[in-house]
Amino acid sequence: MNRAEMMSRLERHHGPWDIVIVGGGATGMGVAVDAAARGYSVLLVEQSDFGKGTSSRSTKLVHGGVRYLEQGNISLVMEALRERGILRNNAPHIVSNLPFVVPTYDWWESPFYGVGLKVYDLLAGKYNFGRSTILSRNETLRRLPTLQPEGLRGGVVYYDGQFDDARLLIALARTAADRGATLLNYAQVVGLEKGPDGLIQGVVLRALEEEREIRVAARVVINATGPFADGVRRLAEPDAPALIAPSQGIHLVFDRSFLPGDSAIMVPHTRDGRVMFAIPWHGHTLVGTTDTPIGVAALEPQPLDDEVAFILETASQYLHKAPTRSDVLSVFAGIRPLVRSGDSRITAALSRDHTIHIDASGLLTVTGGKWTTYRRMAEDTVNQAAVLARLPDKPCVTQTLRIHGYVAKPGPAGPLRVHGSDAGRIEALAQENPGLAERLHDALPYTAAEVVWAARHEMARTVEDVLARRCRALFLNAAAAIQMAPRAARLMARELGRDAAWERREVEVFTALAGGYLLSMSLQE
Ligand SMILES: Cc1cc2nc3c(=O)[nH]c(=O)nc-3n(C[C@H](O)[C@H](O)[C@H](O)COP(=O)(O)OP(=O)(O)OC[C@H]3O[C@@H](n4cnc5c(N)ncnc54)[C@H](O)[C@@H]3O)c2cc1C
Image (cartoon, rainbow, N blue to C red; front, top):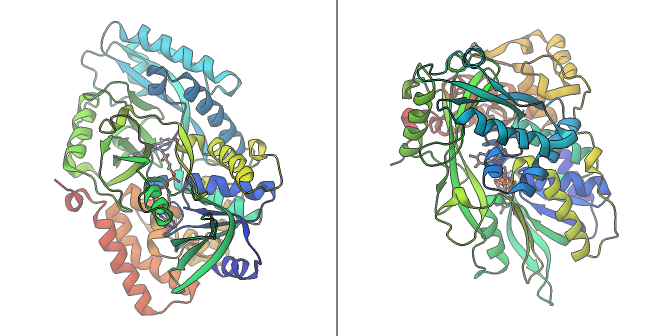
């Protein structure tokens, strides 16, 4: 998968594409995999890098959603639990099983959550990840040694999935590309072209690196731009009423000492009635999230001071060593593309179901949903799109489609595990050239070989693409990522044939961006 190959696939294609997808997040990439695997001709375009939007900024859970169970949305929970199981079967190198402990401080909590989580187990049926159990106080503290012991009565443990969101996205991109899809990052849709009947028959895209506009014809255009979906709809119908109620959520990342075991903490009721998680992730501790309605979605959303204070306050109620601002290694924000209904000021109460909406122009928008249910969203979308575009009927095959890198028995924990069957090839790169075996920073495990691999095979075009999404340095430790940038830029320049000026500019641009992930520099009132 590389840009030159993709540009040449684009140029070689004659006639309309069966399906053109706008947006390279979980939703769009899921549709690309589904449609390409059915045998349709597929073009996907992403204005920035694949996963630059919400899909690299999630809580990293492949879950049924215990909270939706409490809200009584049984069908959503059942669907998500089923998808959770399917995803672990198809991508065991990226999705793993994680125990979650709900600590209990009141006498009624253990029986109450114990029963609720038994229902969660039952709803999972054959896709169960493990049986929930009530824990004694000692067992709870054994699993979570840093938990606040004062007043602790015990806990309940249940099992859910965890993943690396940006890595799954890249694996999906490669799965789609392997099946013949054409995928272009840094290609923005700037116009939708209508025929004399008023129906959309193509898109105008701006290829940002090549600095040129390209017109492509399509039998159907799918708008999978998440929080930006209304903007794309308005390219066709400037007065289209809003479909999306964007809601921001942030996460704080700390070192592993805050959660040294292998279990996560799930807090079922925060002060604002939400759930909050503290999760071990890539050798660090990830804590979040918030749910703040916002006006306009940005590609690089900024955390709010109140959101940071809220997470620190909640974490300090549960951890005996309270984390402070100076402990934060990285802060990142993402925007949920929730579907508007009734009072959209309370976004926590809005449904996480997905919605397929067809405008009068024939533009098909798919939005809402969750990462966990991306495959099901894609199946529904391609079914609808095929009818709309009168494409030959072809069955969905993704339920058992192995995702790129699939290995039946994933390797040990470590940075290469998420690469699955590609891990050996990355190691071989480092063996051929020992300089590439070197780590880019003492605080993080990533090596120079991974940078080369990302530029050569994963369409990484900038230092940010590599340090934020091909490896997760920026999300784990922003200061370390800044220090890694010059070396990463040098390696990429060599790989992509860029000059010293490009290298300098990349380091400057990345350093400015990464400042937003350092708590001291990123806050907005
Ligand atoms: C804080 C938070 C935590 C979450 N945690 C979880 C979780 O733990 N588990 C879970 O299952 N789900 C979770 N979710 C939900 C999940 O992350 C989202 O549902 C999912 O990522 C949405 O993907 P998307 O593809 O619809 O949107 P996006 O990922 O935002 O993708 C849309 C893409 O469209 C591109 N685009 C926009 N305009 C154009 C244009 N004109 N031309 C070309 N491209 C364009 C954007 O650049 C962007 O990359 C979470 C969400 C948030 C915000």
